[in-house]
Length: 129
Image (cartoon, rainbow, N blue to C red; front, side):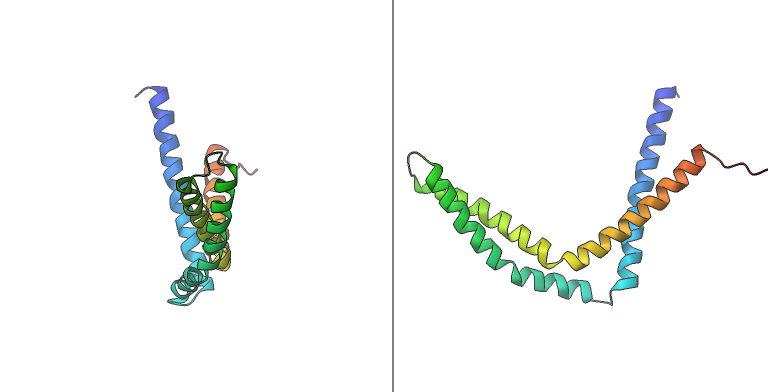
């Protein structure tokens, strides 16, 4: 195996370790911070609350598309409404579920940190004495 292939394989293994560590960190955060079914109920509530930002986004998207279109075609207004609704819906879900996603993201970041520390220590062993 060439040196290039060896580095590529090592990099891929490190990437897999990072992903596995992030998933494990998020799982640990879920187990520490949420009871069984709590995440599902919070996400269901976020989905229910997301219709308001979706409607605001649809109105804003249609208005912007209509005002910026020289031909004033309804097709562009509909497309703008769809894009605005999608953006508003996504933003609504993210905002409403920020407690869950923030907790899981912090757990994933801790897992990544542990994996990076292990990798660094493998490359730079500490010799005492």
